[in-house]
Length: 208
Image (tube, rainbow, N blue to C red):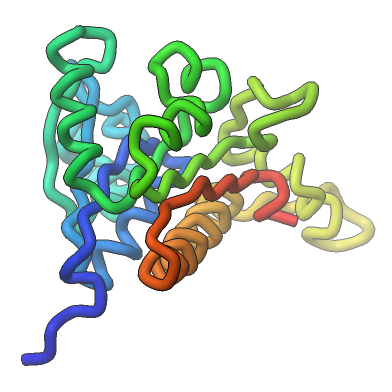
């Protein structure tokens, strides 16, 4: 059986629905992706719909689909021990996927410049709803507002009727596809030149 394309790649995944599919794509290509959840579990475990219509943290279809083929772990970035364990994981990883946004990045020491200084080998994929800078950089969008903010809602449906929203998490999943492609390009660039880099993905721009 042929070796998977990314079998040599290790990925740390801190994302919620805004970037979770990116880790799934990399895992499907053979990468060892570890989904790191906070103490108490990822809030996306409570997103409907649920398998068998049973409301439980391990039954969310949105969560299960986007985190398939990943390993899992629990890490408290607010705790000093958890933070040092995370740094050790980063030293052994090739890609870090996160969508904390600029404010949370600064709070957790994960601003792009800080990550670059500590882990120059690491490919840091930062997904945010409106990008890393600008007046809306700190905003967070749920699926329907994200679809509207991209402009796609205006063009959906019939001219004589209200706009028709796409089901699911279309705009956030578009951002995940861009994030996965960016990570792959950065891995190729690192193989040629030796250094990691930061990949910034805006959900709004990806939806556009």
